[in-house]
Length: 212
View 1 (tube, rainbow, N blue to C red):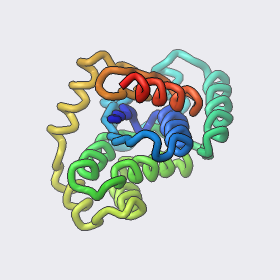
View 2 (cartoon, helix red, strand yellow; view 1 turned 30 degrees about the horizontal axis):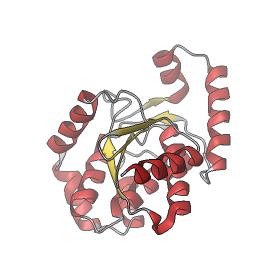
View 3 (tube, helix red, strand yellow; view 1 turned 90 degrees about the horizontal axis):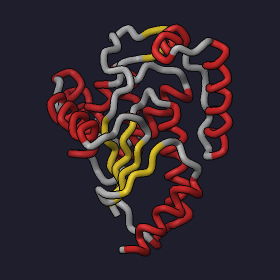
View 4 (cartoon, one colour; view 1 turned 45 degrees about the horizontal axis):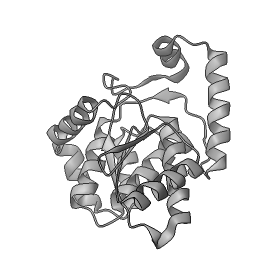
């Protein structure tokens, strides 16, 4: 079973959704063979390298108050805790394009499971620790955590490799109608959107597998 997880490191619901999916896959175990691919999506594609204050940026982008943002974050923290993800303070919003380039490289050249591990490390760095997922030192630390070649990772980041491939992938998924994340696409046909509970993912995967 092929699973494409379309998401952005900047998206808190993507952290919830990925961890919920992981819990579902743990319960399924060896009953269903899965191949998980991380696919790029940028919530803030024009974000400058220096980032922006999170509350001010989100208030302007979505037209909501600081109080609403605080309530939303409390709800997200609760949902994250339910699937084993602990949210920390995130005071700024950052550009994530280089993170997507590194993820693409990990999927193309890394060992099995490395791309998935890198995604978890990046989500933890930003949503757990409030670090800048566009900073080279943060990206390299995440690559090391995921067991990837640090020398090659640095070369990818410094040289701009996989820029075109990421842009093409982003355009592909948007062209297929993906305009919000997380979006989980199973076997190129079935779509599950949002940070769903793990039970929803498990039920869907079992039903799709049973239907052949």
